[in-house]
Length: 583
Ligand SMILES: [Fe+2]
Ligand SMILES: [Fe+2]
Image (cartoon, rainbow, N blue to C red; front, side, top):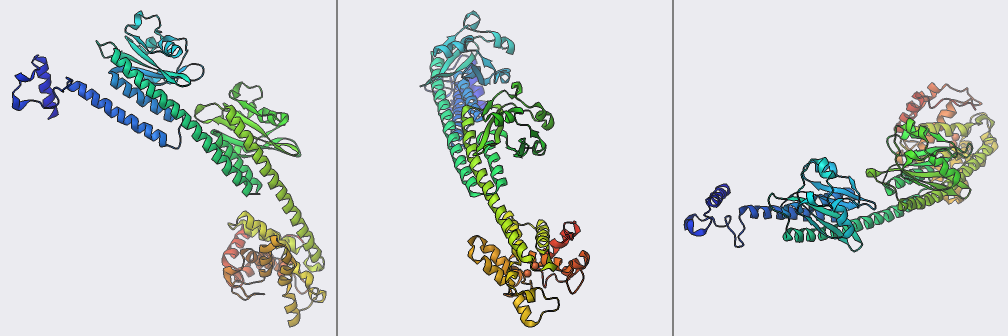
């Protein structure tokens, strides 16, 4: 339908009989032939197309302003859409938007033959019409560029694009000119006119505002994002006293906060003073972890030795750069931020962010963020270190206490040490948390501490025990629980001590607990305890080999012992993780 009407309109024009009176009233094209303002179909279609592009541009702007990330990619999309609309509205075939990067003008959007090659290209502010417009802040119209002294033919010649006329407007904000938009070659036979200039100035003004707003928004969002991440990091760092977790979180934070491809934490080896990669993120983690740097070697070594930060945007030409790292990891370092991690005793490590994402450069702001982060990490590492020392001291004290009790019974010498090792071996074949493994170790050390309250005549008796003696002996889990009764931090360990002679089917003591109501640590210790009892000499019998002991434990699976833990125990035996330890 529309095609027929268009053809009719076209025929009418060609015949030079475009007036209404020559067309029969019943066949008059109602809308498309002529409008009140005298525009024909082509003009209408052009306007409709421009309107659609405007709608698209508004959509892009809306998406940009509501998106979480506003970066250079999003800004380029905005510029490219603006350029499309500008070209449509001015009926022009080619054009570019150049933004000032602090030194020169950079082609950020371009349309027309071969225009993609121009993206990213730099142009001096002294060069061509765009340079003049940028420096003067004035719009410039050149109707015949070949005769125009301001015009630089260099790019046009390279593109093999015959430039005839140019209209260029500055992108101006309250802070000055930030770029230039230029349109080239108005449709054949029509030079750029006053209407085009007004149109371009208006759109350039709007574009400049949108760019300024986008940059501002992007900056404030980035800042807000950084603050949130820093707060979250501080919370995470303070919520754990686990050294490994602190290190892992530090790397994740430095990588995301600085927008880096890779982050790493190097620690100073207290003995050799070498730097080693404790944790590294990224594909080359394994290779990176094997590397060590001498104090002063490479950029990280320099940072540690001099206790100074480094912000390097051209690493390949930095004399401090450690080239062997590149050979080992096959990873090209372009730029980096590297800061010392200081503790009370001096530099304990180096935190670094490597290669800004999307080919960007690190800034002084990044360095500052890295400093803040390194200070938080230093405090968290120090706390975790002190806590680890405290725990170690505590465990040593517990071991000393358990050893003192054990000395009372020469036949069971080394029992504690073995039960600790067997329990740990079983735990390795189960999916226990780190906290559970630590609690298990402590409980295994202390499990028989209650024997301190058992009379020697019963504890050291070589023959069988009578009923009263058995009852007395069976009090040791309760005595153990009582001994630790005043230590709040030992609440969970107390429960394990009390339950280490309970049985899966409820036939154990002192409470006759059944199944999973027995703490898992106690169920593990029960198996380790029995295994050691069977595989060591007693006054009344000789030690059995580990296979017989394993068979006996297997036989009691589901009655005395938790079947799943028996399976884990058997897996540990198969893997050679449980071998009889000499007492
Ligand atoms: Fe016991
Ligand atoms: Fe025991």
